[in-house]
Image (cartoon, rainbow, N blue to C red; front, top):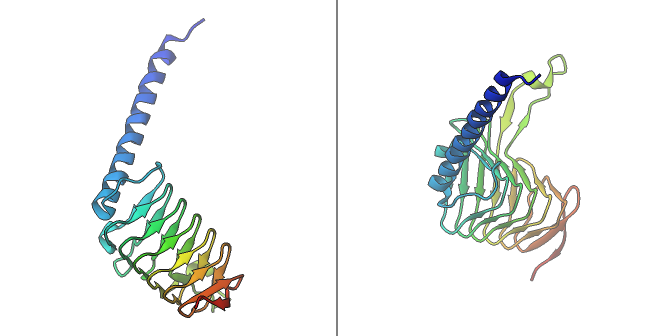
Length: 190
């Protein structure tokens, strides 16, 4: 026997669900347009607290990029002509500060995190010890390869290249090529 009530409820549920997804996507896309001046490709790009994010002109954002600046002291500043490839995460939460200069290329699946968990008190769970805020500074004309992780308290100097898959834990001087985990300067660009 056919359950006619179920046949009537299912289409309504799908209409409401799809309407919600459309509106949620519209809000995210509008927020991106307001901050970046572009509409992101893909549906899972995300901006958190766009008031704390400033973006220069001619910036491009790939699919599934995420920008977090949720706390009032968190700040993300992006220069002109910056290119974010797909699946990039820029996280300045917990009072962190991330500055990205002009003409920077950021490869796919790059992660930048400007704060870290406190872990000094072994009698408390790490999750209950809060965070230590710091900053990340990416100078002008830097190329960051695919899958790079940039940790807090790092400055990447002007005209530098960070090789794919590297983990940047310390400052990289200008005009350098750095590779590895942790990233080490392998040669100068001059």
